[in-house]
Length: 227
Image (cartoon, rainbow, N blue to C red; front, top):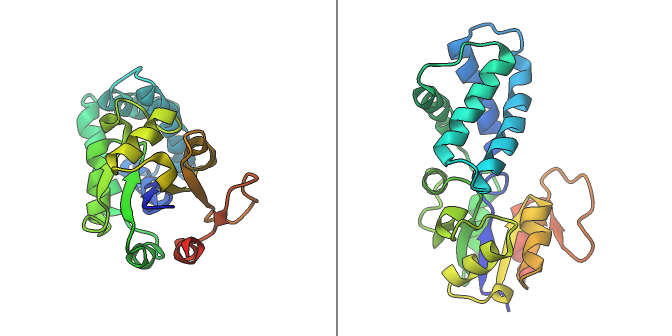
């Protein structure tokens, strides 16, 4: 019986991609107005994000170091002068990013319907920032906890210990928890090895789910699915 529900955050509750794309475009416009490669920047930044976040999650650098490395790599790719103070420069990006944090329109209503379940977030982001996102989109009072690898012994999705640790943090066994998210490996097939169930949130609705896993295209479909 499902007693707890864990949501992924970026791409599931919060529109991270739109926020990050807008923020890095604004940052480059601040530092190199009229740059000819501005239209390419969101895709470049997204690729660097995947690479350097993976390094951090593997323990190869700190969260702060991966931010510096990511920004330096972008500047070099675009032939833009690397800022002397990368931390201050990244703070400029973060300021733009925070201003674009919004929940998807289906989030508030779906979460409000999930009475009787223990609700939380399981995300691979940086703990402090992910907690701030949850508050910013108005879910701080609805979700019991925000869990990242930083508070789960360094275990990030899709490590099995991440899922078992998250279930334990809710006071539940893995088989009593449902994970809802947009990433097939991290949010759907990954938790299955621990007995945790999952639902794939495929907001683009472009392909079938892996065999044996349910798919929804909006969080409005989640409460009826659970019923």
